Image (tube, rainbow over the protein chains, first blue to last red):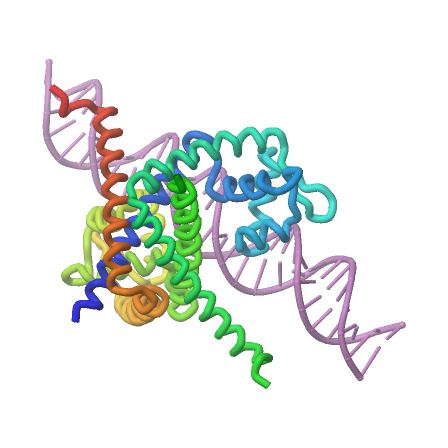
Amino acid sequence: MSATADVSAAWQAYQRMRLQLNGRISRELYRSTGLSEADFDILFLLEESPGGSARSIALRCGLEWEKSRLSHQLRRMQGRGLITKTADAVVELTDKGREQIAAARACHGAAVRRYFGDVLTDDQLAALTAISDQVVARLADDSARDHAHAQPRAEA
Amino acid sequence: MSATADVSAAWQAYQRMRLQLNGRISRELYRSTGLSEADFDILFLLEESPGGSARSIALRCGLEWEKSRLSHQLRRMQGRGLITKTADAVVELTDKGREQIAAARACHGAAVRRYFGDVLTDDQLAALTAISDQVVARLADDSARDHAHAQPRAEA
DNA sequence: GCACCCCGGTTGATACATCAACCCAGTTGA
DNA sequence: TCAACTGGGTTGATGTATCAACCGGGGTGC
């Protein structure tokens, strides 16, 4: 059977797409707005939040980041004047931050459309969504199993 | 039409898969072998090369890395005894490097199978291959166009 | 010859990601 | 009450990725 060959070919093709597509988009984003992917993710989430502010923990849950990663990133972004940290771990967009995320949204959206949305058919988009959901579900399954192993509470 | 919604949903699902799948695999690889993805890629390519050695430029072409990225990475790997750099930019696997890549191959292959190959049907694998190839082709197209713009040689 | 450029490689600076260690406040439970 | 634990947040160290600047040799054209 050729299943192994198919898996290997699919994996290699996927890796190429992953590296090149993300490299291109993040490079275009950075060159036209000065924002990194990490900057973009933070600002995007903040702009979606009511009042342009959110608790650190909300950002962490939304992005699924390590706490230290978020802390370092927020410190750098505060240094560049994109956000402010008010008392009690609340993060808030500055005017400069609002300005930059607006420009970045347009740039990012255009790049995603050009290199991704416009290239694929509706069937392919649906197929990729299903593929992604299945893989993510499998990852979550295994995490749950590991967690259950480490702390066997559910088995009475 | 719902095309926009489909693109957005597919993009978000794909991003989740990309982040979580790669995070999981590289974490498992690192925890069980001490090798990063970058280490793995280099050692993998070297083991494929005849004699376990290759010129720097061959690695750069195979991996599509920046020259400075490769230089830094090779320096660190030489420091850890995974490779040696002989005269004239030739890189060679050490015994320790051979040992580690063998273990890493098994770990990496198992993870790819568990979280990717075993989760998807043959049709899905074929669909993902097609999707990836199309996106990569589009990226290459745009690169060629940009390059042609910068150095308009082909147009007489 | 010589000025010029290209290209492979190195280096340093900076940003980003991860791990481990720590601080502190709120809970829990003896 | 007080000790132990938990969880959010910070910090420092290290490894990784990218950009810009530089070095050196090998063409190319004059």
